[in-house]
Length: 204
Image (cartoon, rainbow, N blue to C red):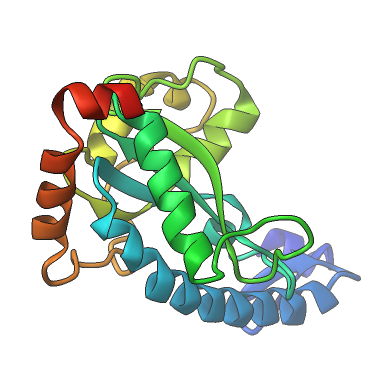
């Protein structure tokens, strides 16, 4: 209130901004609307990853979680896989989304899923503590959790809280999470049964 009286801050449509930067309010609102549209695209096609064998969780990252996208933005995801099958899961996930033309590659970026990070269930800790990574990984939003939870990821990366004002908490943004599609668990189990043992090891 003091800053407003001193005409250093102004409130526009429920948002505070520096005097002279009022245009950013309209820009933020438009970006929020655009991000919500992109969320629906990600939820539609991201649910297919629930059928991929050895996938244990899918988290959304990047500009989308900050609602700071632009028209040509892609859709960044971080995927957790079963230990010992990270490369198999990676190929299957990329192949499945590529089959439907939803994987980012080359100049095809807009509204396509970008597989920018893969981890295994036994290697959840990000080995590069920094302020940038703390902000990035504190804002992950779960799309799916099957065997690996958001809480487990944050616990493995407790160092994040050392760079922020407060320790991030799992489950604060639950409205974006999807239920596992009907039959996806059975498809996963069948695929993992076929790719287990000697054959699966050789393929990996």
